[in-house]
Each structure stands twice: as structure tokens, then as C-alpha cells.
Image (cartoon, rainbow, N blue to C red; front, side, top):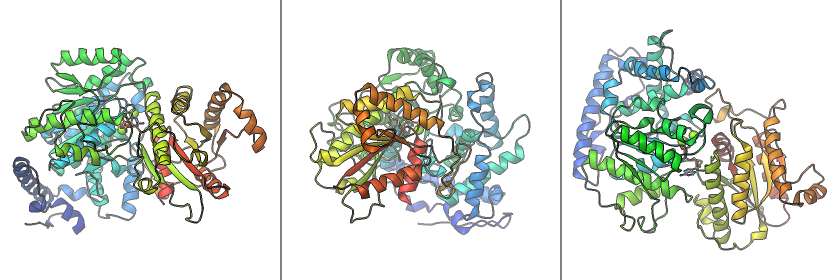
Length: 585
Ligand SMILES: Nc1ncnc2c1ncn2[C@@H]1O[C@H](COP(=O)(O)OP(=O)(O)OP(=O)(O)O)[C@@H](O)[C@H]1O
Ligand SMILES: [Mg+2]
Ligand SMILES: [Mg+2]
């Protein structure tokens, strides 16, 4: 076993020894348990990586790394990153094709062209389920002993969530090293013709840099938006492509029909590269098939995973829709394994049990803010009540339905269970239709916001009706503005205090839609109005998220009997991220 820490005399700036430690991988420590072949392949890979890093350091390539690592420097990096955010630049249809070509210029400026051509990429596009599919795929390959890089979007709390190495968010030190390396180099080399990349493009380039320098065996890339003109589409020869569920989202950019949307997503198909997808609406499937045949792509449609294939194990991500994402991941991972790892993967029929590494990978995959259950830590133990947050970042009509279904089953499962233990474990438990005990002592509350480009007349009825169909009726809906600011990549420290000037007109619009739904269902609203002495007991607009959470906590304290408040937080991943920041502090 050896680990090299190398500080070149020629390096113009001081690098922290911890950072250099990260760069010099303790080669023999990297044990690959399951298969001899990946073990050897990976070992030689790491030796290459080590050599390369020593070469780079000797050449002073890390000279651009900021001297100050840690402390303010992370904030500085976030500020620099924020400066790249341009509002809706992607929506500019007229020149988006031309502008996409810039991505290749950036790769040249960053000397990444060769690295990227060698990268063993799994590329995933889709309207819903991209991130989940990528997380499952990564987890499977990691369980086979491969070194993985996972790039997903968006992030919930910290931008480093977007870059995972071997299943773990990149460390702050490594992030800073690679961040400044890319940022400073681009700053030096860009000009009027080739301006600094926009925010998402920069993040994708950074992912390429990180995965190249870290010499990952597999790079799993989630498309940011669309496919054809997405920065991740700079990859010319992925190993395999996946298209998750297609639906209506980002129509202002991708087109107003499912066919057009599918065409954009199929833009990731590459000549002769196999692809997998899930059952899609006819209009979308036709386009996918057309594009596939044009490019000689073998496109296979997969069906949801069965309980038998999982040998009774639960998936790491909850909700029925995840069985489809997981099955897509199984095909992506097994194709990758066959082509790169040269492994014989057993047949994947609906009735055969998956190999152990697949099951373990699928059972342990994780992604924050997707069907996540978090009991509130701030409720004092002496209170008889209980406050549990059910968080899911759904923000399109189809995903709202998936989310509503998950929430309905989850609250029923949790209320049925005698033990509170599995709530603490963050699992939502059973998916049974049975009546739960103690139904009277549970109240479901909705905490909602969505971006104003979304259509609440679609989202809210989907949510409310699906829940109602499964016997779950919200006692109250709370509407709040997001705390994260669009033009800033913040950290927890940035959360603004309550701002009395905040514009709540969008939240009142959402409330109006909700009230419309309540009243169209009967007189229940009128009753509540009298009882609470408020304008309406069915819904409320809060000027800030902390105020809404305070209201929830106060309500638990004030409730006379032991009431469990089950709060569904949805409509926006930003909102989900904000809630997670607040309740975990
Ligand atoms: N196959 C699916 N069908 C319908 N809804 C889904 C599906 N998979 C996930 N969802 C819903 O979409 C939400 C986001 O899931 P995920 O992060 O996997 O998708 P994504 O495509 O990466 O989304 P985003 O557009 O936010 O990047 C989930 O919380 C869930 O509500
Ligand atoms: Mg999206
Ligand atoms: Mg995503």
C-alpha cells in the first residue's frame, strides 16, 4: 500500500496538504471486491491517475487553485458561480443551436477534449425520473466495485450535491480545487466571442473536469434541460443512453407538444449507441423510435421492476414510480457492465431474481428531496403531538400525481405502523390500502409553492384529486415564497430573514386556485370560515417559510389531543431544499 503526497517546488501557490492528499490516491486501498477484472482495470486506472496528477502538479496545472482553501473561499466560489447565472438564457430559441457549439470551445480551453472522448458515460434525459434513474445506476455500478462519478441536477442545499464520487458528495476541498482550476482558466481564456459559460454549462464542464481528473470508471450524467442542446450532450460517444418518463415541462423552451419534447430529449442518441426507455405516450414514443432508427440506435422499452426481481427488497427511493426508474437503471447498468466491465450479467427477465449487486445497489440508492420522510427534530419530547415532513420535489402534472400517490400510501403506512421507529429511519413504509388506526389523530397539511412558469391549475387539482382518491384529505394548505434566491447559489448561512416587502401575489394566486377546488367540492369551506374566524380555514399564505414552520410547530404544541401533523412539502425542489435546511439546523 502506498500513498503519495507530492508538493512540487515549481508550484507557484501553496496547496493545502489535505488537498494534495485528495489528489494522490492511496492506490492499494482501493479494493474492488467482487470481480477480478474491474479490480485490475481499476488499479491500473488509478496508477495512471496518480501519474497524471503528479504530472499536472509538476506542470503547475493546479497553480490556479486558490491559496485560501476553506473559510471564505467556499463563499467566494459560490459568489463566482452565481455571477454566471443568467435569467432564462436557455429560452433563447433563435440562437440556442449556435450557442451550444460554444461547449466544444470550452472543452478545448480546459484541455478536456481527449478526456471526455475516453470517458465511459451513461447519459440520461427525460422529463421525470432522470435523477432517480442516475442514482440507481450509479449505486449498482458502485456495488460492482467500480469507481463512479455522478452528475445530477438540481441541488437542494449545497451545489456539491451535484457531483458525487463513489456515491458521496465531492468534498469541499476537492470542489474548490477543481472549481478554481476551471473558473480561472476560463476567465483567462474567454473573450467577447467566446464569453464565460453560463451557470449550468459551467457546472457540466466542472463535472467533466472532476470525473476526468478523478479517473472514474463510470460517469453517469443527468441532462440538465432537454437533451440536444444540453451541455452534457458534449459527450459524443456514451456507452449507453436512457430516456426516462416524458411529459410536459419546460414547454417554453422545448416545445408545446410531447412529440417536440421527445425530439429534444432524443437529441442525446448517438450513432449506434444502445438506448433504453420506459413506456411513453404514443406521440412521444413515435418520435423516439424515429430518431433511434435514423441513428441506428437499438432502442429498448423496459417495464417496471417486479417484487420478485428484487427478491422482496425495498428500493432505496420510495414511490411506485421508482420501480420504473429502477428498471431503466438496471438496463443501463447491465449494458455498461457488459460493454465495459465485460461481465456476464444474468438474464433480466421479469421472473428471475437480479444479481446481488443490483439488488444491493437499488436498495441503497439515495437522492434527497424525492419521497423523503423527515420527522421534525424540534418538537420537544414532552409534547404529545408529532410533526412529520414528507418532502418531494414534484413540479410537473405527472410527477404531482406520482407524489400524491406516494404521500397517500406513505401516511397510511406510517399511521398503521405501531412503531415510530421506521419514521426515524426515514422510510415511509407500507403501500397498503387498509384503513389506518388512529386516523382521527392525524392531520394532513400541504406546504406548497411552485415557480410562476408552472400552471397551478394543472398541478393543484392533480395533487388534491389523487390524494382524495386514496382517501387523504388535506386539512389545510399553506402557501409560501421560496427562500433560495434564483440568481444566487447560496448556503444555509444565506437564508434571508423575514422580509415584509416580499411580493406574495403569486402565493395568493395559488391560494385562490386551492380555494376554488375546495369550494367546488362542497360547503366544507363555509363551515371552517365561521369556526376559525379567518377569511378561510382551508388555506393560508405566509410571508416566509420560517413563519409557516413556526405555525406548524405552534399548532402541534397547541393541539389539545395527541395529533400527528403530516406535512406534504411539494411543488418546488427549492422549497424542499429550504425546508430541509430549516428543519435540520
Ligand atoms: N417515472 C416517474 N414518473 C412520474 N413522476 C416521477 C417519476 N420519477 C420521478 N418522479 C417525480 O419527479 C420528482 C423528481 O424526480 P427525479 O429527481 O428523479 O426527476 P428529474 O427528472 O431528475 O427531475 P428534475 O426535473 O427536477 O431534474 C420526484 O420527486 C417524483 O415526484
Ligand atoms: Mg426538470
Ligand atoms: Mg433532476
